[in-house]
Image 1: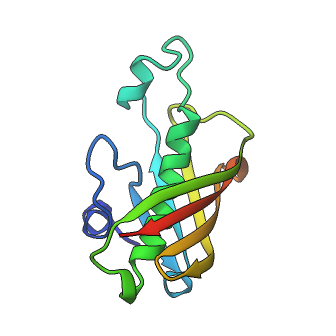
Image 2: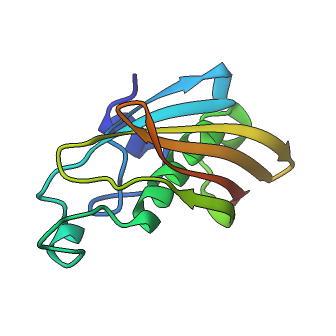
Amino acid sequence: MLNTKQIMEIIPHRYPFLLVDKAELLEDGGAAVGYKNVTINEPFFQGHFPQEPVMPGVLIVEALAQVGAIALLSQEAFKGKIAYFGGIKDAKFRGKVVPGDTLKLECAIIKQKGPMGVGKAVASVEGKKVCEAELIFAIG
């Protein structure tokens, strides 16, 4: 299991944009699982439905992308590089994420050619899928 410090050695994100609290690599860099503990102290809750706080879908997708970047950048060929968002396909939101939830973020790299990669990503809370998307990465 990678802690926050180890995650920050792989991807360049920092507070408030580091959205992954811990992660584990699967399949030798071909996939990763991350976890985000969602708390009421998150800065986005101040303005995103403050009477009934809901984590913005775009931030769920960003958290999934960070897990995909961890999977890609953990590969020996890409160590020390940066993974840029290249695209989002077929994103679907299936439930809300609220304070107190633990968001499980899974991303498996399904295609890779040179500096490009495609990941199949799923976010869930307590086993219930809340978001899924295909994410495209460019390594720079």
